[in-house]
Image (cartoon, rainbow, N blue to C red; front, side, top):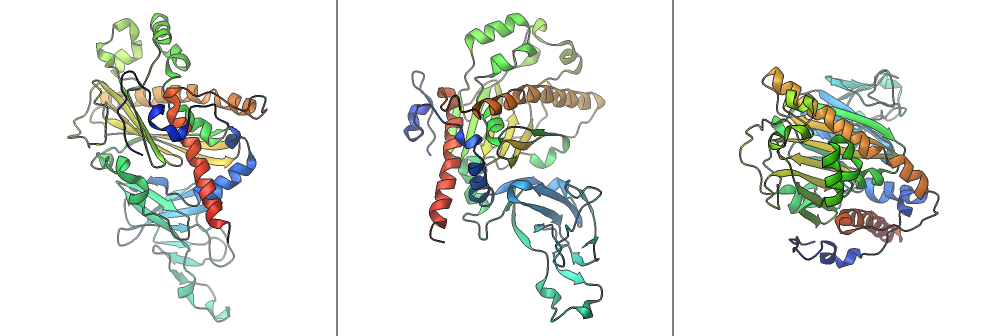
Length: 421
């Protein structure tokens, strides 16, 4: 879809007439059959981000990822040649999970020269080749070269590791990402190695939490208690509208202006923010990251707050104007539950003060994230009653309208392609 600047008297939605303006259904967030279809039509066809290369920095380093939505566990490993490869985490002998520690259903990581099955000690090298079988002579017509680990399609973009579970991916990773996302190339992701991670099991459909971050219409209300009363009331009356939305293929972007906290009146800042010189938008001292890629701040906001790039289906990269970024992942576990992962990335702190400033930003993010999540289970339980079947969306919620339409389109396309199979 083309990019349109928003005219002062116009709207965003009018530029995407195929999305419509009428009430929408949330049946896709409460129907177990839709969830089953999403697993096959979306999560086994789209490119999925599962981590970053910094998690496997050297030969033999690995991590596993439990992906209930794809009904599998995978191993990501740095091979001897420096490549990043992915395999299904299953031994070819009796189907035991190959790599796990104390709890077989939890992610793990480590270093090794080879993978050894805990059950019968079959061994595989870092390239997935079966190298050793105890009492090999007792097997029948056995050729080890035919029984390596089952590979998963894997590719890396800007340090982000993606996998694809289709027998043959319909697009290369770069084609799937498209120009809007690849215009971010050159951002210093690799230097952002100071990291904080949050993980939560949420009793709500994965799309509902993703929707919460696709508009800022809620910000003056839901997050109002984070600011002084007078400011909150003024914000509620004035409202808030992001200056730029963009839709390209299955992906979406919302960009917005920001605040220079250090220029605000002191009574609008919390004492801890004064002490640490930091807050939700990040440390007040912005690092010198060099020239930013052309894809950032498309509206030319000054001051610029953030850009939220939402990569279909379940991955968000959110860039903050103060020189750091975070990611969101939403991993479905059922039609009414998912695992949310939030990860914050900063440059390595040079001083204790910089470290404390980053920690305050991480804690502030957690507080706001909890507020965003606070409505989800209540929403899930009430839309599941079907007492109300259609819901209104305003012009600022155009990305929500597109996202649900896109998931339905992927299901429809998959059903059409497989109808004759």
